[in-house]
Picture 1 (spheres, rainbow, N blue to C red):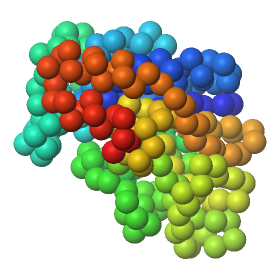
Picture 2 (picture 1 turned 30 degrees about the vertical axis):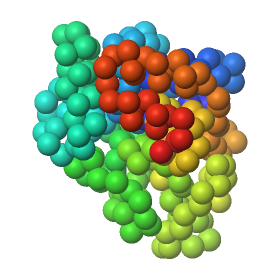
Picture 3 (picture 1 turned 120 degrees about the vertical axis):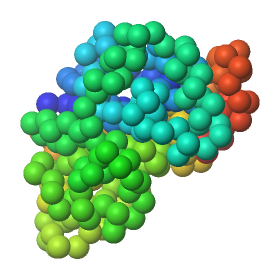
Length: 244
């Protein structure tokens, strides 16, 4: 089984279509999303339509929750708040209902999926350290859990040889045969923040017992122009070019 895992899409249509085309060429069996389908970008309806058409398995991100008024947008910065309110006016009722129906987590045959943490997904906390990762690692019943939220790829893991110690790696590939548990942040499809503007996604091959992150170029200028045409803050267009 080969999973393709989408990090935060954030209504970036150009990045999403680039990633999905690459997944098709790579023979991905099941596409999964760690949430934040909307927010920041200017193509929320188009991205939702693609995910629904392809029957992608999606969990709810904090921007998705804010868009359907399940999370107070006062918790967001000014640019994010403006994008959330723009999104609320841009989507249709069927989009709203779909976002509202998304689960907080997924427990699949070979992996868990959440947006922020696995142990308390409704809080949308960030996992930025081994200490942050421990509560989620402690409750994992699958060998790997995929998350997003920070937009920065990182693997937090417990090795077979030392299962009580939590370590981390920034290596884009993880040999899961050497780990007892691995929590993998897959980065972001639509708004990378690791100073690398390339889009990307994660692949999880259950037979080879490994996971890796694939980075790809996409048409950033087209997506930046879409954001400006929508009247969204210019900073949301410019940051795509910098990967921040």
